[in-house]
Amino acid sequence: MEERPDWREEFSDEELAAIRSAIPNAIHASQERSARAHTEYADPDGDQDVYGVGMSRGAQKELQAALKGLDSYREQRVQGTRRTLTFVGDTLLFLQRVGKKMPRNHRRFRLSYLPEQRRELLEKTSNVKYTEPGLFDLPQEEADEAANLSDVLDIVGDAGRVTLFVPYYSSTPFSVGSMFWAPARLRGRYLEFTDPERLTYVKEPAAKQEKREAPRPAAGFAEGERPRTSAKLRPRPEDQKGRS
Image (cartoon, rainbow, N blue to C red; front, side, top):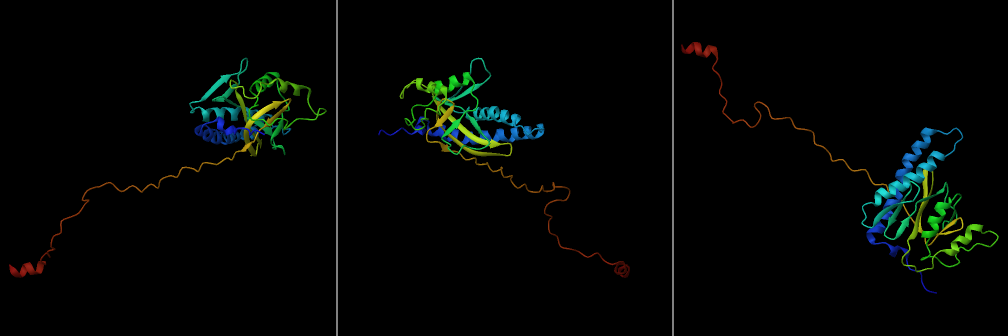
């Protein structure tokens, strides 16, 4: 069997380092703000709508801001929406929160809600280059009717296509869980990931403040070294009377 190419070869060393750092930092930066908004809103029913929307929008914006310095970075507006897509070279980075917990099988994720416009976007960019044929084939009785849409994807090796990469993570208003990223393929309502790579958030240490020396008093009157002179005793008054 012919070996699949390593999907990491899709990126330069500089791009890989930037993406691996940007994804966890973007998620955690958005987590801090979204968690605060969730706490302040204090929904009486405990719903997490404010938090979920904050994460879905905020994390992607943070990711874009972190990657803008790359020469291969570009953005593209989705027609008819305010959504902006994130590209690095020929890859589309599509950040996705999977919910409160990472699925036990983290190589596959069911999309609970998928608007038609977003389905078309994912199908057009869906990864086929790194997919193992039949790896996640579903039994016919379990397959969604829409699963057949994945059959019309372009054949493997189409050099002119964009490859979909999905950074995905679990989180709650209290913490961020597991984080992965990998090339992804849409099959029906499922995103399937090839060889996911786990990401780790490394909190940057706070910058050490240099120890400031206490200010020295400014030089004033009579400061500095004095010339050394021999001491002379003044004569006593009674001695002076005896001499007169």
